[in-house]
Length: 387
Ligand code: ADP
Ligand code: MG
Image 1 (cartoon, rainbow, N blue to C red):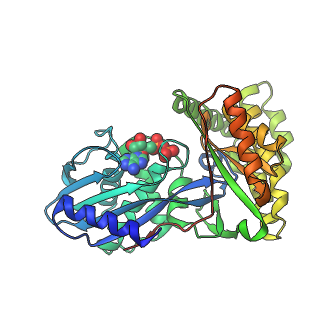
Image 2 (cartoon, helix red, strand yellow):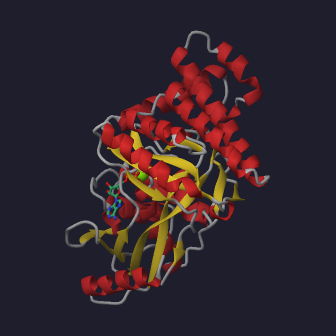
């Protein structure tokens, strides 16, 4: 995040609102290395922050007015009253920052208004959490300006509440925590039950590797309904097994648990994914901590197979990325995010970046698919003040 961006955003704020901002903040999007669809099962996730960020210039107001503007949306600033913010009332992008103000006030924090101008380099709707970046950047700015003293994980909780209740999207806690708490050169091992976290060294460049993100540019319209179905199926599995959440089914007891589910075929598949995925996260943590980074490749591939065959949320384009990348020499690859489109990640030797990228691009062209967007993901810093 260069100072230049902070200055541009500050300058635009001044043009819009006729005053200087009190500061400029940045919050990143994220990629999940491993631990997919585990966060609503009280399980483990392991995201890292992208270099792509939402950047916001913000100033306080004491008259109850909230003005919001995005450089990426062609419209004048939206003006709202903080006292009138109502969950579910806003279907536009402004619901994300408004929801944060609403959640802060609901939690008893005195936020009396703000002027906000923001812009973001996090691709929107690509499964890279542009929404969490928007929420967290606004939450961090207000936390600083109103001296609320909230820690990263607490801001993440409030942002999740904003998205769940105000926006109306049933997301877990991973995205907001990643944006708020990640550190450069690390992945974040997060226990979504108690929110305990550990920074795991993940400096691929130092070890001669790269991690590519391949945005398939596919967004299936039915993904929300399918998400709800998977979530409900996991809850059913937990109820049938008599546990609070699937997190409580130990990996060593998976076979016995599957047997107890009898002919509940669909629930069995969902349970098997979640329980094995938690185990994969733990395996990746220990491999990274023991310096055996290349060995995480096959674990990523196992994770993809589980999401494709058991959880059934992959799609043709995601499978094409994974299969092509592996066939052209990648160390590992898997879909990441909610599924049915969005992005895949590919772990490669630095020397193979061009070969693998070209193979994936060629495979998409040969299949007559929209060209994917491929970029390198360097594990970057979490939310911070930049100006
Ligand atoms: P994801 O979080 O995977 O990118 P979401 O659907 O959760 O996808 O969030 C995308 C939404 O976030 C957009 O539809 C838009 O409302 C909002 N958004 C993202 N980036 C911006 C931006 N730069 N300016 C305004 N709104 C944005
Ligand atoms: Mg989102």
